[in-house]
Amino acid sequence: KIGETQYIWKDGAFIDWKDANVHVLAHSVQFGSAVFEGIRCYATPKGPAIFRLREHLKRMLNSCKIYRMPVPYSLDELVEANRALVRKNGIDACYLRPMVIRGYGAAGMVPFDSPVEVYLPCWPWGAYLGADALEKGVDACVASWNRVAPNTIPAIAKIAGNYLSGQLIKMEALQNGFDEAIALGPDGMVSEGSGQNVFVVDGGVLYTPPIDGTLLPGITRSSVLAIAEDLGLKHVVQPLAREVLYTCDELFVCGTASEITPVRSVDRLPVGDGKVGPVTRALQTRFLDIVNGRTEDTHGWLTFVR
Ligand code: PMP
Image (cartoon, rainbow, N blue to C red; front, top):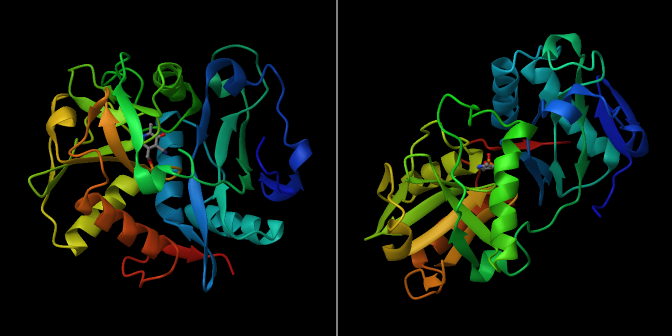
């Protein structure tokens, strides 16, 4: 069970955590129409700071646009509401989960007849893939399930229904004794993890697959590419064949919850020598230093809540 906070912001006001309920016939419950975001707030020496809040909220509004969900709040209003949420709950490090859902109206599939509701919860949340994951890396497999094909269910929208794919991928991995899985796209090329983007290091060059209609354009992914640029590391966005996962020098997954998590084996084959590689460690260290306010935030990625 997660560590509950006291308040959730709902449509402009704070309500009690226990009162943030929806009806069983809410459209989002029946049909998966709940747009959401996952954002981390870090405890920095200058107080709690939310990482790339604006970019996350912009992606959320884009997800809503794709699904024709009118959101009655501007980007600026949502930024302020999220800051107020963390302040009101009196916490520092936490995970924020803004949600725009189709609530209870008509019981039918037509979305237009159900009201759009905005909820902003947050709660304390530690390392997603376990305490050791960031330090030692995780064991991954290649999922037998492929990601969605372009022009089926839009992969750039972060919406509940898309996570049926992630659930199948993650359950298969866990039940077969792996920590995480990397899924391929319909063309057999590397797509993404169940909740992370994928990076490969080979011959000192960083690679990640393009936004090809099968994967979520991760905010952490774009941060990693920016940090690679800062570090003068050659980085290439290009399609990657599955077997590159077995032959590369280093491999890692990244996402808001997972941050930068090294992958030490794929399908029981060690990645490189099975230890966390220097490029992964350099990117991870720089990322964690920025988000935790230990080094200068030259990109303007932190939004302080106070
Ligand atoms: N892919 C999927 C399917 C995800 O759920 C996530 C986590 N939101 C990511 C990639 C990484 O995205 P981000 O870095 O924006 O958290």
